[in-house]
Structure formats: structure tokens, C-alpha cells
Image (cartoon, rainbow, N blue to C red; front, side, top):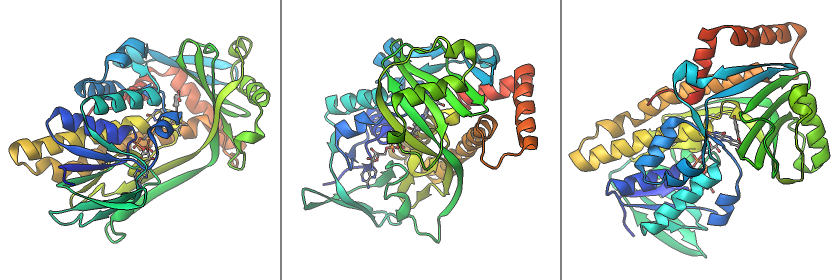
Amino acid sequence: MRTQVVVIGGGPSGLLLSQLLHVHGIDSIVLERKTKDYVLGRIRAGVLEQGFVNLMEKAGVADRLHAEGFEHDGTLIAFDDDCFRIDFNAQTGTPVVIYGQTEVTRDLYEAREAAGGTLIFNTEDVTIHDADTDHPFVTYSVDGQEQRIDADFVAGCDGFHGVSRQAIPLSVRREYEKVYPFGWLGILSETPPVHDELIYSSSRRGFALCSMRNENLSRYYIQCSLSDSPDDWTDSAFWAELKRRIPKTFADHLVTGPSIEKSIAPLRSFVTEPMQWGRLFLCGDAAHIVPPTGAKGLNTASSDVYYLHNALRDYYDHGSRDGIDAYSQNALTRIWKAERFSWWFSSLMHRFPDQSEFDLKIQRAEIDFLRTNTAAQKAMAENYVGLPY
Ligand code: FAD
Ligand code: DHB
């Protein structure tokens, strides 16, 4: 087979890139290791920046997002029983949109299928060849049959555990990493959200987050030990712990119910540099990970896709290599700012095992500064709603 761009990974990065390339008349083939149902069953992000929404519009897949997504003009920050609001609208004039990653992925799959795009599932042994030449190709097998696709470019959109990053030789690649000493236990439940905006709560017992998908679907997270497994937490133990970690006014009104999903995610900051090697480009979690506190994972994937699809369009439309040569630099400049924000917000809101009384006082002072200082609120809001690209 031959195509212009082979996209490895059928998660949000790969699908959005493939759909945007299609809008610009550029052909691609998407290779996905799992089945479509498996990808759609992964419950992950819920907060979209305006930049992500703009790209979905450009890709022609924003109708349902506009109809069913919820604009949020602010968020609550709690510290024990104190609570204050960061007003995104007043500070930036820009809201965020609550719309699940599952729905984003579903809309993108529908659009790719409606356009007759080639999506190949259950691929095994995906291998990138000759990425440092002008004739890269990718081999893989399905049902034991080996296949080969020749292409102009390869986009590595295969997440943190994918193969694309590993295809860049260690002599070229440098990785930066910070692992946090806790995880997030998340549940999804068919209950009304405890509040109409998100609540990020720092308590003596650890961090908690109250989020949502719609009026009758809530998403809650609590900071947990890395050694915990979801099976260690019954639903009632989860609800009891959540109530202890959010201000009493909300705990008293929390509607509980059976969980329909329960999972633990470790927290990590990670960046690989460069994000390109020859004709291979990395996008999204394949190149970087943030701790989820700032809701930046999916949103950083979208800025990569923005830079890469523009670069490829310039290459095919005008024969210009400027965009593709500058891709890694352009993407990383924004990524590191999102890494900084996610690290800062995570450090501010969690309890760390080795935290001293002094550290706690400093954390409390910083939250109080954020509560009382409009410049600090503006900086937080600008980062949360998304830096420009
Ligand atoms: P993935 O979603 O990981 O997709 C990669 C795809 O590649 C997968 O489908 C995988 O099966 C496939 N693949 C892997 N290896 C291969 C291979 N060898 N060959 C072929 N295919 C392969 N982000 C936000 O912006 N906001 C949030 O609110 C938010 N909340 C989160 C909450 C949780 C609990 C978690 C875990 C993450 C959250 N994130 C959030 C992060 C966000 O989900 C990720 O950043 C996002 O999924 C990245 O998309 P991606 O397409 O780059 O990678
Ligand atoms: C959600 C996840 C996050 O990491 C976050 O910061 C906000 C919301 C969510 O899944 O709804």
C-alpha cells in the first residue's frame, strides 16, 4: 500500500490529524493496535480548551460538541473547608468546554468512516523503517499476515506506550521525567454532579476533584497510593473518602450511586526531545505526558496536531519545508509551558508523603495568594483555558 501520511495510533491525536489532513486533501492511513470499541471504552479527559474546539470545527466534527458540550466560565478551588472561584470569563474572556474524550473519539471515528478513510485495527508489530530517508515505510501484521505501507511521512500518535518514540535513536533522543509519589483513583457514576462547575480540592487527607460529563453523569477523582488497586476501593469507601476531602457544604449534598467505571492513573510529567526525526513526527502522549491536574493532556495533543497538519499542508500546497523543519521546536515551546502549569497545579493541590509542616504552610500561603490576588488568578486562568497557538 502507499499513502501520503501513515498515522500510527487511533486515539484522539491520530484521528484528529487524519481528519484534518483529509480536509486539506492529504491522504492518510491510521493503524490502531486495539479495536474501536476498546478505544471508545477508555474513560479519560473531560475538559477541552477553545483551541481544541477550534480544531474540531476545522475538521468538520464539532456539531455534537456544540450541541452537547457544556461551557464552563470558571472553576472552584477548595482548601479544607475554604473555597473560592477562579472566573475564567472575567480573567480571560474564554470558557473551557466539558465534553468527554470518548465522545471526541466517537465523533472523529464517525467522520473518518463517513469520508471513506482507511482505519486498520488490531495491528501487531508495527515497525517504522527508514524514517531518516525520503522513503519511509511502515510494516505491521494483522491476523499473522505481514503488510507494508510506503509513505511520505509517518506520524507517531501511539500514546506513551507506543513504538514511535522508540524509533528515534537514543543518540538523538533525550527524555525528561518526573514521577509523582501517588495516583488518581477515578470513578464515573450516573448521578448528578455535586456542583455545576468543577471543584479542585486540596484537603488534609489528599486531593480530590469533582468533575462531570453531563447533568446525570459525574466523574470524581481522589489522590490515592500508588500501591492501591481499584479493587481495594468499594464504591462506599470511595464516596466516604471523597466526602472527607471536599468542603462540607458540597459533601452534604453529594449524590452517590454505583460506579460504572473505576480506574487508577499514575501521575507523571514527561517530555521527549526532539519530537521529530527525519520524516517521523511525534504527537500527543507519544511525546509528552502531564499529570492530569491541569486537564492538559488531550489539549497538548491538539496543539501538536495543529502545528503538524499546518506544516504538512504547507509542504503539499507550496512545497515549503519550513513548517516541518520547525515542527518540534514550535510544538515543544508550548508543551513546556503546559508541563510547567500542570506541575505547578499538581504541586499546589496534592499532599506529598515527605511534606513537612513548613511545606504545608507554604502550600497554604500560595493557595491564599491565589484566592486574594487577581494577577495570580489571571495567570492561572490563562493557563487553564489554554495558552494561544
Ligand atoms: P492515546 O489516547 O494514548 O492514543 C494512542 C493510541 O495509539 C491508542 O489507541 C493505542 O491503542 C494506540 N497504540 C499504541 N501503541 C500502538 C502501536 N504500537 N501500534 C498501533 N497503535 C498503537 N487530558 C486533558 O486534556 N483533559 C483532561 O481532563 C484529562 N483527563 C485525564 C484523566 C485521566 C484519568 C487520564 C488517564 C488522562 C487524562 N487526560 C486528560 C490525558 C488524555 O487522556 C491524553 O493526553 C490523550 O488520550 C492523548 O491522546 P493520544 O491520542 O496522544 O494518545
Ligand atoms: C477531568 C480530568 C482532569 O484531569 C481534570 O483536570 C479535569 C477534569 C475529567 O475527567 O473530567
